[in-house]
Image (cartoon, rainbow, N blue to C red; front, side, top):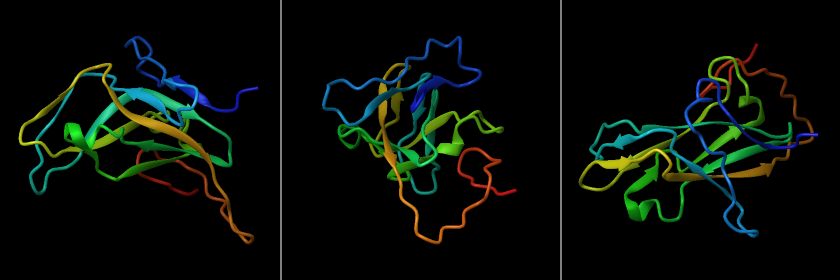
Length: 152
């Protein structure tokens, strides 16, 4: 029985995407690589964050979510996640608009453009359980993808 894990997202099957791994037995997070070369421009006011594709989707239990987190060395190298952390709900997996492909959003705070190469470790994923309140009435169904929780 499958509990949680990673898969290659639709459209990325022939792109030599590596599934994330933990590097040590006590690591909390799975290291995620960039799916393609990309340039993150140096920050200036008004610039939008750069989305870095992973070519991945992840599945987990209905009472779980996964966190996209910066690596501890990220800020030292100039890149900082635009939203501090990414919270990805279980129902993002396989959604109709993008199959659950997750991206990392970064700003580059160096004084020059930052080149990210395919295969560079760009972030981490940590799986978590979540709790609900006694009178929780959530009944919506996700119909959208990145950055949306639409209801039917």
